[in-house]
Image 1 (cartoon, one colour):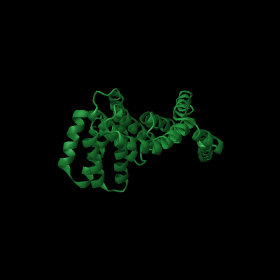
Image 2: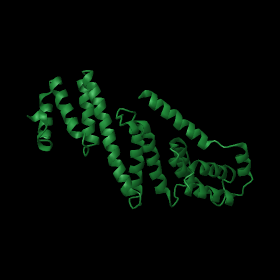
Image 3: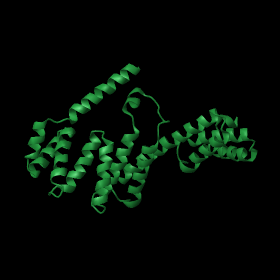
Image 4: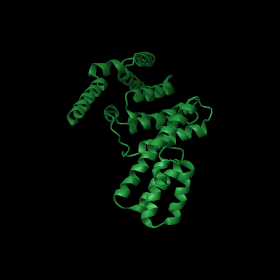
Length: 252
């Protein structure tokens, strides 16, 4: 299994490098091409799904004609092309620059939406998805950033056509972040760090009360309070469980 993953990773890296590389001849052609022709080439490449070629044209436009007639659309197209190439680092860098230079642009809601998508992309690991490996324990920073991006979009632009999808993605992210906190709490239980486990489970109840992980959080809290001799706190947790999860095994 490890050999397969390693081999697949090498193959993907090789494909990515070959797709993004360009010859000196290509660079010379780009340097001699007018901005209108360059932009037409970039749009054609995007329509054909050749995003690596589109990026080369768009980057040439962005660097050589920063004040050209297509300047803002070039940056927007670059953001989308980076997303399609799974290049979140370049995409987010361009997004942050766009927001800084064009804070009132008519498509700024789209830019915030794409920032959320980029961060979600960073949080995913393709080979884990392919192999069905649960890596809930991975660093949640990108997921947290994506949640903030979508939250900012919804609060600032509630009528945006991207708001509904952003809301759905926020729920997915809440589930992912709640699972991470439960994983941490379970680790604390293994270490007999009962107080830390209770605090982490409590954070799930406070931050992600509308996720499937709340039942597990209550179980952890009940167990931790029992170990800590906090009988009143445990009784309160049991009452909450009876009201919300009457079939839970701890109530039998």
